[in-house]
Amino acid sequence: MTTPLLIPSKYQTDIYDWVVNGTGAACVIGVAGCAKTTTIIDASKLVALGKSILMLAFNRRIANALQARVPANVDARTFNSLGHRILTGQLGSLFVERWKVRDLCREYLSELSESHCDNHRYPELCPSEQIDGNLCGPRISFFDVYQSFICKIVALAKAMGIGALEPDDAETWWALTESHDIEVESLDGSEEEGIALAQTILGMSNKLALTKHLIDFEDQLYLPVLWGLSGKRYDWIFVDEAQDTNPVMRALLKMALKPEGRLMAVGDPNQAIYAFAGATNEAMDYIREDFSTIDLPLSISYRCAKTIVKLAQTLVPEIEAWDQSPEGEVRRLDNRLATQNAMLSLTPQDVILCRYNRPLVETAYYLIGENIGCSIAGSELGEGLISLINRMKVPFNLDDLYEKISLYRDRQVEKNMQHGREEKAEAIKDKVEALFCIMEHVENVPALKDEIFRLFAEKKGLLRLSTIHKAKGEEWSTVMIIRHHPWDNYRGKLGQEKNVRYVSYTRAKKLLILCSLDKERVGSSDPI
Image 1 (tube, rainbow, N blue to C red):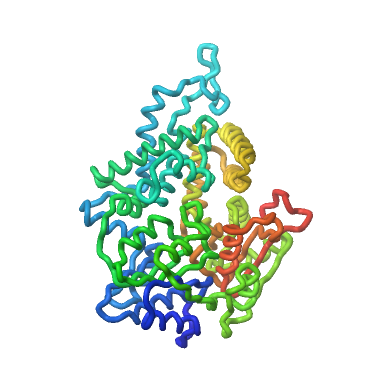
Image 2 (image 1 turned 30 degrees about the vertical axis):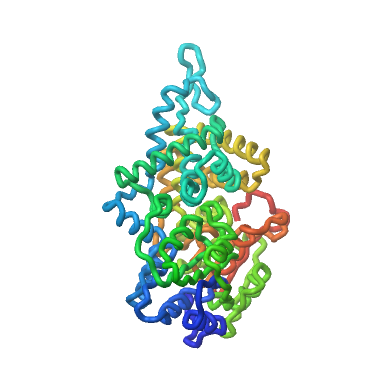
């Protein structure tokens, strides 16, 4: 967390004056590294004595850090913690199961498979064997076909408040699949059938929460809104990272704020990069509309050196450098040798970032070969790769696995390109290529799974490699961005991609290293 000098900036002064003398609600539009944490804490100290205050953060680490620095009348917690407390007040003891929806899928879809699948369906996707002279393979179950789709769409349905904030009908579900590019990954199913199954699974999930008190993380936000539950209401609510709020989070805000209460939502629309989770560039606009807010800027970045701020201004002109910040450096490297030499000078206090996963995996193996300890942030990706491997049903043979996953990749890419989903096609290729890279370093499928767990294990004291999405909210003295292509490579894409690039630049405090490729190497398989 970046802390400025004790003398507040002109922007902080205006915010503090609004807290003391103003009325209503405000959106504080803060740039990256603007000392918003310090501003929120100091603002809470100016609230009149006797007022109840809720401070909401997006993860437990930040919430705990806030709680240690705020007055006793401030309740600092996560959105999930707020929802959990509301549910506990209604239901009593709760059982939180991360894989609740997946397990429901396994139980329900396995039963359907017995009556709807046959052994001769889609043999090209199965290891072949001869049985009575006929080509057969393992049965492809409804679980294999639809599990991934259902888990994604149900989680998103909860984030959007289906059944509470949005109607629970096929049209609404179809809109979710289209706006978030969610589709059945297997060619053996259809989105129409998947949506019908997802609706059933969501209903089962809700019933299980009501009767057995079994919930998942998404339920903590969704169910209080669905059931219209109310908990403690506050005079003041401060929201950190408000640009990442989704509809059910904003509904919880309304439920937790007294009718005459005041709200300060601090966020940066230019750092909204979680559209896949229901958070969009318009999140702050929704807060403005729902709470009739005024805008207050917080434009000075105390985190980033002046040279880094100057680069960030090409994307977000309103960001300003602190006059006492160091000059810093933006270093550009355009060849493999220079990039590798720079990597060897990095420490566990630095980070390597990339937009995609495959280059991170390849870089990890290069560093390991140079006896530099490293780990890739993102256990979710590791779990996703394991899930993909398991769906192929290849127990040991890497060649068979390679063939089946190649077929999966080609068909998925073709399908998405036909529907104009270029970014989704690129994401699928990236995921598969990351897996293929790991496969080159193992001898069989069980060893492959072990290697994935090893690469994506969170370990302290090692050089960290991360996607830009995983790095949001953190900062390092030195940030290296690999595979940093010129902006014109994005072919006019704005919005989330611009935000992703802005987030990546503003993780660096002193040194930002941008590593692209030699012109003749662009589009090659060179990992770095």
